[in-house]
Length: 64
Image 1: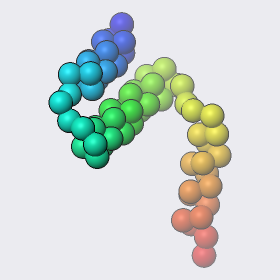
Image 2: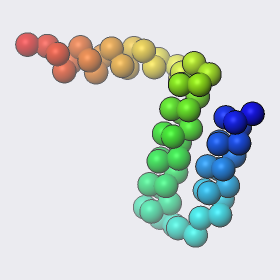
Image 3: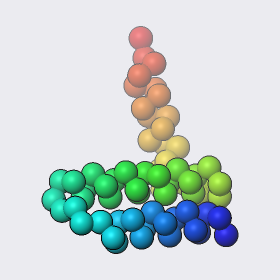
């Protein structure tokens, strides 16, 4: 129930925003990232290809 409340608060913040253009896009990205992190941490839900993307980034950064 706490997770749903937290997500709804974020969505209400987006709906009540008076920003537009690039500012609104930045707000949307920030809130989306926050919601996805909550879902990953609390419910263990991840997007499609999440682990492949994560390991690809790690593999490219650690190559010698």
